[in-house]
Length: 313
Image (cartoon, rainbow, N blue to C red):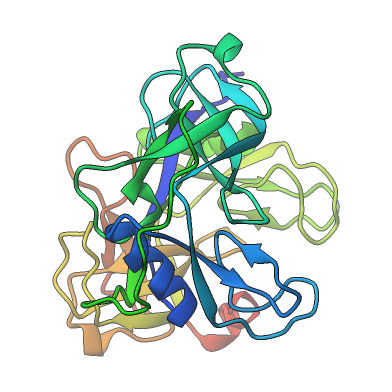
């Protein structure tokens, strides 16, 4: 049995969100080297500020400036910084209660080693040289043994306030398709399509999943299907994807390969998009060096009868 495949995979997309008045003021303040909190009904100052009291659910709008100096309430040493973290050398993650605040702010502390960090140590904000209105405008915290800093005298108004942010969301992990799909992928490299048959209901699933989704039993009997198949349903794509060099509009379809009891996805080419239809008989088109079909094109055969594929819709 061939070794099960695995490969690194990254899922990444920009996340855009608008800001309410409280978050807008907080991030705009960071751009201007001002740290803002919000005052609760019972007199607590929350930093970072929130729009609703986490205890009473009261709406909060009373902004107040706090000092850029504070005290470490707890910490953890980061031996191996990862991509996108505040510092590229080992540092401490710290919760800092800024002077004038009643809650702690999470950020990085630039320290020479874990022996130099302790709960209760005094720190101050190190501002980024270029500030855009984001939490990264605080480059990090640094040890500080001076007097508590004084607020700058925030007037309550900022010009050109930040109204929205774009944050890059990213997930890095190692993906393994498992035993059944590893065999499927290896077969595709030889321009063959294989599925697995359920020993109970006898259905052939493509791509195989290693178990029958209906009976719940393991599958192991490999069955070659296709290469021709039938379009069971489809959609017309009118929005061009950034990572695909395909002109719109084009058709993406569910295709039931001959001998399979599950339809797979594939692009339809070689025919005007408005002539694609349910029941159209198609065959794969491979490009040189490809590990899977580039698209499917009409075979020229008569369309399949609806009764032959209605159970696969």
